Length: 158
Image 1 (cartoon, rainbow, N blue to C red):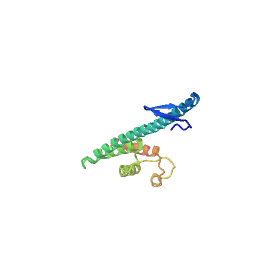
Image 2 (image 1 turned 90 degrees about the vertical axis):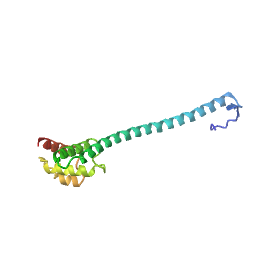
Image 3 (image 1 turned 90 degrees about the horizontal axis):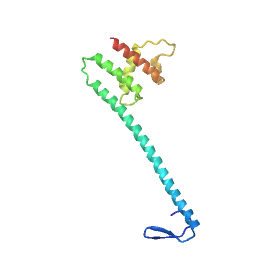
Image 4 (image 1 turned 60 degrees about the vertical axis):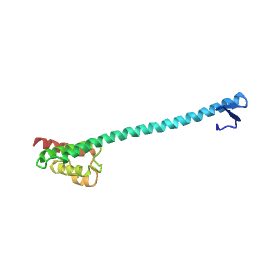
């Protein structure tokens, strides 16, 4: 039970050692060592579980916010195209900021908004075309955000 060659007997749920106090002390330390290791392992897995739960909760809150906005966009009257475009672009910006832009639930909307924004974006840099970067999946988060914000500015001016 305690890992040493200790001789003991049970009496009324207490362990009684039959040998000298030196060996009793070693057995006592060994027993406490196992309790400490067990508590350490339990504490470690509890801490990992709490961190995972917290990260999962934050992710769920982000996703819930975006899905609510997406449902609001879908419910817009078809005659209000300007409102639809502004909210769709705002959702695309939020998807980039919340790091959900590649989530399968929002992928189509994000892709459509990015394509629309690229059509209206004026690129003053000598880099390869933005469409090629998108197709090769080389568009950075910073570039996507810049393009979408420029499109949002354009939509708000109209």
